[in-house]
Image (cartoon, rainbow, N blue to C red):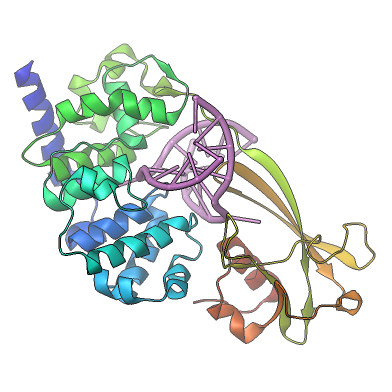
Amino acid sequence: MINKITDFRLALLDWYRHNQRSLPWRTEPSLYRTVVSEFMLQQTQIKTALPYFERWMERFPDFTTLADADSEVVLKHWEGLGYYNRARNLHKVAQWMRDSEVVPDTVEAWKALPGIGDYTGAAIASIAQGVPAAVVDGNVVRVLARLTNEQTSFSNNGKAVDFFKDLANELLDQASPGDANQAMMEIGATVCTKGNPKCTLCPLQKFCRGFADGSVSELPKIQRAKREKVRLYRGLAVDQKKILLHKIDSEAKRLKGHFEIPSLECLKLTEDSKQVEAVSVRRRAISNQSIEEHLFRVDTEGLSIDGKGALNWIDFSEINSILLSGPHRRWLMEYLGISTNT
DNA sequence: AATACGGGGTA
DNA sequence: TACCCAGTATT
């Protein structure tokens, strides 16, 4: 058995050293770049995070620069990536690093910082500091479930993560935990994929009980929560190169401090009102919601907005500099035909 | 233990 | 549409 684990680790690391993708936090590694990448990659695919990472590094090259930046600027560079508490927490972590005499060097110490949980704590400690702590993310769960031909049906993803944590640590190469962790995730992302897994190219095939059993495509078995369907109705009021936007309260649960296209309710209008005209429908999704968003053109004649409340007239020239949710920015850009590139 | 987070890619 | 993505914090 000892030999088998040694063989496994060797096969995994050898594959990774020859097949890893070239990524900016690998070609030029540092503690800071590891931390930033891990925050961005929480529930976000590499392809999506990549351009954000490059822009982030240009503007905030190190912990101190990030720590000293205004939160508005920090959020602006996260705009469109979603789950904005990640940016707020990353900002706090940078400030902690700037103000602290010591650098965390254990999983537990990292987990004491905001936005860092089991996964991110182990990822940072192992990749940037060589701490032998296994990560268990969605990729690792899938690889291990197939490797062990695990038929248990987990009630949620967290249960599966817990289930495989011990095994992940047993398999972890103690001499190269960072590479071993990244190798497991890389296998999951590029070879042991959910659909059309490339078993013929897999360096772990000879260890894989799921492959031997022919059950790879059915694993892992995890029950997922459904997304709730939500319909939103929004009003677009444009007047003289200005647009009426709603600024979300800083104490709100989501999109704190962001602007958004105001809801009809917010404008004190109804869908049936003769003042509005349906112009566009868009579908998108976030976390546990599947959103169908309807856009209406609003006649500004009937509006009485004082501009002192949450509703603000924003000049087209200002749109680039305000915080606006990604989908709404794209919507405005397309509908108004104005450039809102940042 | 369940839910929120208002994002996005892929089959 | 359904499922997944280098998850975490809150309730």
